[in-house]
Amino acid sequence: MSEARTYVVLLGVPGAGKGTQAKLLEQSTGLPQVSTGDIFRYNLKNQTELGKLAKSYMDKGDLVPDDVTIRMVEDRLQQPDCARGAIMDGFPRNLVQAAAFDKVTAPFGGVRVVPLINVEDDETIRRITGRRSCRTCGAVYHVTLNPPKVEGICDVDGGELYQRDDDKEETVRNRLFVYYKQTSPLIGYYFAKGVLAEVDGSRSINEVQQALMALMG
Ligand code: ADP
Ligand code: ADP
Image (cartoon, rainbow, N blue to C red):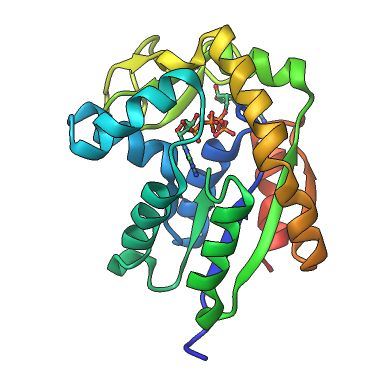
């Protein structure tokens, strides 16, 4: 086996707080956030072939095909900043992706811990419909629950805040449906491996962060 790495997989419904927490964990652990959603949005913005392919799926709230997604993640994990591991945000999202991820991580000790961030559906919808994202750095805010210092402007890099197209209520409902159908089986999958750890995601951003840090060991 090669030297062990720390791979953390954040699980939870859309809007649970995975991206918010992944960014905070990145700051406190130095492990990079690998967000498949952010990578797809970057490709969409730059109108790459990958972005054009992903668009129709993302617009509907469906999953982008596994072969494309898995290849994209494998490439990302080979970058030098992932040499100690990564905080996975939004990947894997179904059992095929989870099996592929096991293969990639097995030489480095496999997946270390899978925090499941639990939030009720109505709170999730409230969080997503008020979510605002930075166009340039991807930082995430909420109009009332986690507002920026200056309305419409990112605290981190001064970028413009916008509402994602797929954060409209009808797309959000399909994304929740896709989560329950395709992603929630990962809960049993990681439980059986002994790496699942449930976290109460209804608490403040700071409290959830403390709970996650305690799991990092
Ligand atoms: P995900 O990546 O799981 O889809 P995000 O991190 O983007 O979730 O969070 C969704 C929305 O909820 C954002 O607007 C974010 O600011 C807000 N949010 C995240 N965590 C909390 C929390 N603990 N309490 C209140 N609002 C939160
Ligand atoms: P959220 O955390 O709010 O669900 P993401 O930013 O993780 O949103 O994902 C946005 C969209 O990007 C998804 O609805 C899907 O179309 C696509 N996507 C992200 N990650 C994956 C993945 N692992 N597999 C397939 N599609 C993905």
